[in-house]
Each structure stands twice: as structure tokens, then as C-alpha cells.
Length: 319
Figure 1 (cartoon, rainbow, N blue to C red):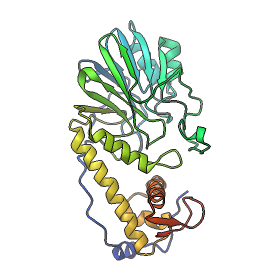
Figure 2: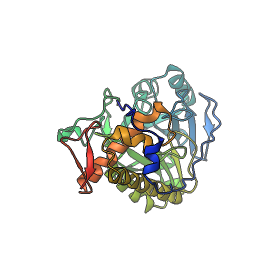
Figure 3: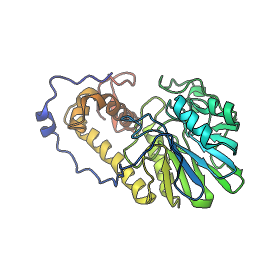
Figure 4: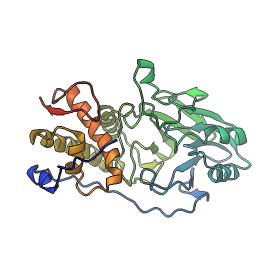
């Protein structure tokens, strides 16, 4: 838990000159009718779950790809109304695959109930923490630990159905098992939580990894996708400039951490109010997790040092 230091005041922020933030072209407006099937492109339909919040925007958008024989992407949270809406939307169609971008509670838990009702092979990179747990690392407690896919996919695997083709794009960083899915017929990328049009992405250690996250963004920057469909929020219609702005934003946050360290601010609890000036108190813990991930990356690159083992309570300094 991140607790603000009572000695940290606005004066502290004034002693630490900060760079100007890059502009990110967010799109936050999304008209939602929960449980209603919306045709968003010739091959794509969306049903939004009634789970709005500070990390889900208006709710989880579950995508249905194709007609007749379909794939379902991110079936969403374990909410009866949402599952019922999906089951109704899929009436008369054959579900070939249920694809999961990653195993957070707002993305994967509805997989098995939907499969029980409509069939389909459940596909993901793996269980929660896949790629870390098997190397002896711990991962966050908040994931869907009950999830196990029927089939595991890896980068560049292809999943095809009648009239649609999906390429698997492994994008670790937000989680180690995060996968985006690219619909060839529309050059559309289902970007999960890796890239969202309404907000930046939380990168929370130990499963979240800032170095991997930025590397994955850089990989996407080299692609030629026409549009992104995130699981939360509206589409991103100019992916390359948007991803470039996200990369610049991560560099900006890293520079803010450097300046805090240069000013002798040693703890994440003291950095958060300086870096995220004006951020509501209820969001400080999540912000602190991203600062923690940035510091881990900086220590591993030799830019900073940690007093003892990595932890969110540890003291950090310039190297």
C-alpha cells in the first residue's frame, strides 16, 4: 500500500523542475448501451459489460469477429447479465474460438461459462503469470488464477475461421501473458490493455514489466495496423502517432523519476505526489506501481540503485 509522506508538500514539487509532458491524443467519449450488440465494422461486433471503473473506463468490450462461424475476444468479467447478453448475441452462430488477451478479472473469467453455453476452444498465451511463474517469479494476486486455456498460442501463430484470419501478437509488459490479435481482413488490432485510447496502461510488478512494455510498444510502432480496438474505450484510428506518444510518455515518466532521485527523493511514496501532482489519492497506489516498474528498469540498466531487495517500500538513489 502506498501511503503519502506527510512531509511531502507542494513545495517539494516546486524544488523539482519537471519536463513538459508529451501530448497523447486520447479519445475518452464512448456511448454505451450495456448488453447491446453494436456492429462497429463489417466483421466486428462489440458487447460492453456493465463494469465501469477507473481501470475499465465504461466497461469491458467483448468483440465478436465474423459471421456464422465466429471468434470471441475477451469474454470479460463473471457478470451474469454480460454472459447472458453474449449468449443471446451468438444465437444461431458457431463459436470456433474464445480468445483472451490476458488474465485480469475483467477479461477472462467469462470464458468457461460462455464456452459451456456456446462452445469454442479457449485460447490464450497461458495461465496468469505464464512466462514468469515457470521461472520462479511471483506475480500479482489480482489475476484470474482459475483460468487455464484449452490451447496456448505464441507470437505469430494464426487462428482462422470462415472469412476471418487472426494473427497472434505477443505484447508482454502490462502482463507477461498479454497477446494482441490482428484481424488481417481489416488490418485491425485488438490491443487488449496494452494500448488503450482513453488512458495510459498500468504496468505493475512483478508480472508487469516496464522494459518489456516499452519494447512491445516499439514493436507495434513498426507495424502497419489501420485501427486498434482496445478492450476498454473507443477505437484508435491513428495507431502509429498514438503509440509514438505513449513511448514518449514513458520516457517522460522515467525522466521525472530521474529528477526526483537527483533531488534526493528516495521513496516511491514521496515520488508519487511530485510526479503525479493533483492525482486523486485513490489512484496513488496504482501510480506507485508504475513508478516501481520504472525504477526496476532503471536499476537493471545501471541508472539507479536500490537499498536492499526490490520493493515498493525500498529506498532508491542515483547510481
